[in-house]
Amino acid sequence: MARLLRSLIFVPGNNSRFLEKAKTLSADIVCFDLEDSVPNEEKESARNLIKNTLSKRLEYKTEVYVRTNSPASELIPQDLSKIIQKGIDGIVIPKVNNVTELKKIIKTLASFEKKRKLKPIEIIPSIESAEGVVNTYAIASSSNRISVLVFGVFDLLNDLGIEYSKQSEGAKYARAKIPLDARAAGKYVIDAIWQDLNDEAGLEEDCIIGRSLGYVGKSVIHPNQIPIVHKIFYPTQSEIEWAKKVYQAYMQSTMKNKGATKVEGKMIDEVHFKRAKALLDSIDISA
Image (tube, rainbow, N blue to C red; front, side, top):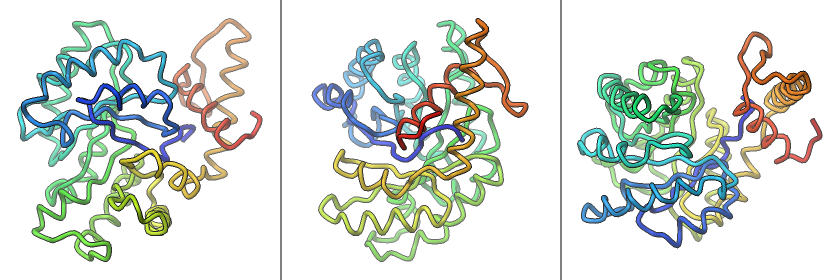
């Protein structure tokens, strides 16, 4: 995995000041949000704001995603109609329950891509329900668009009828199962948020637990959480070595006036090169 997935920060899509500030964030993925942080009466204005922001994609130094509304909301077609354009790296789909609803979304997504002459973009399904937990392997293995999933603990606890607490036992099984199922499908998982912004020690401990379960990063809700998350979710030696191979192979290919190449049988293009370089830069190791 020559790619950094240590942190995914959610940025309210209805706040132009936050969207502007996101240009300076050091998170690995900046995700403009159309779901929980945006009231229903502001959905359309948020879509337009994000659409305009994506036109300035080059001003953002990290990967840029958008979280749509949930499948149950029936708002995803309206979301996609505005946000699918040049400049978006992928979408996070919240509260994915099963493959059937995911394939429906992919069909809609593909139609917009075709009309707008765009390459297929990545999808990050978010697992936030009992049904989603049961179906994690099927969801993870359902599409080549998926390379990573997200765990959403608060909606899962709500689905289970359990009150959240820092010592909550209710989500422990799901938290352990999701990365296991994802890795069986050859995919990665980003862990759920830590809600208490004043408890940095608790965040660090939670990151350590998450990494021990197989998560490669964590969702965050405030920039101050990013350094702690990055400290714990440091790239593994195998990830560093793979990034070096990708970087070197692509550099050699470009010196021969070629673009895409192969590394150990896997196709490597400019996107992989940029992600490998970002990983190596993040640990200050020369390729």
